[in-house]
Length: 312
Image 1: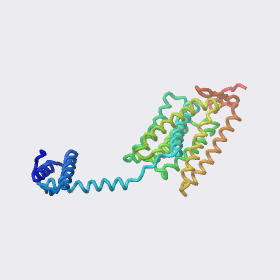
Image 2 (image 1 turned 45 degrees about the vertical axis):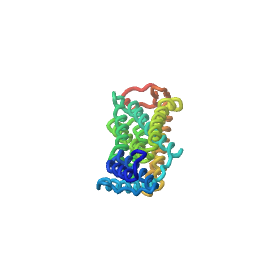
Image 3 (image 1 turned 180 degrees about the horizontal axis):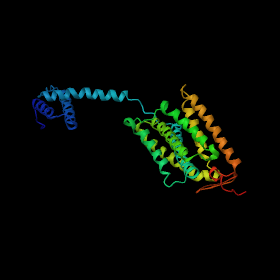
């Protein structure tokens, strides 16, 4: 529109500009420009033109409710709560506990139960499977539900703790491998399921997954580097089982049906772990441990050595 245009020509130009506005991002920008020009003309005393086509009237009518709905949604959206230090500690503890359970159970099964090639693949596979079930099952909600999974987890944790010293520390392979495989699966599913339920809003997922990764690395360092320097035997498995039961009891404080079994499991794992330590002291002459494993010299022959002479 030229500078010498009359108000009638300006009104007609605005009507044509509105008529060309189509639904979509570009159309909305053109419609907005038309409204600005219309306002300027109104200030100059020029009447606003009517839409020249029904499509323009429909687009203009639809734009206003959409804008109102967007404003209402922005006002109704609650503020996202930033994770606190306790949340980070909780994520770190669950992730580290799952890693400690994997490594300590694998070491116990492959060195104290059966030295079978590639047996370590079984616990690793179960550990990774719990991640899938906890974070991807049921459309992203996970298959873990505390009220259904916690009780068998506690039962297997007590059985695993009992198996450390049962039959003089040597369970039959046909019982021990399924017991510790199932126990590891349920224990890791507990850790990863609680992690999945504690996920923050999408804005903080980077912090969440970074903390989970750090917890897994921390558990690996604790078992691989710290434990061989502090312990002379595999004490981290009974300690991890007790920590699992204690964490389950803490999470069950608000549940009347779960707090009782959780407390019983905590006491049972503590007693079984103490009995295992006492068993090692009474039935072992020498215990040595390094980065590569643990060496024990028992005072009495193992059951499979009963038909052979034992030195000393």
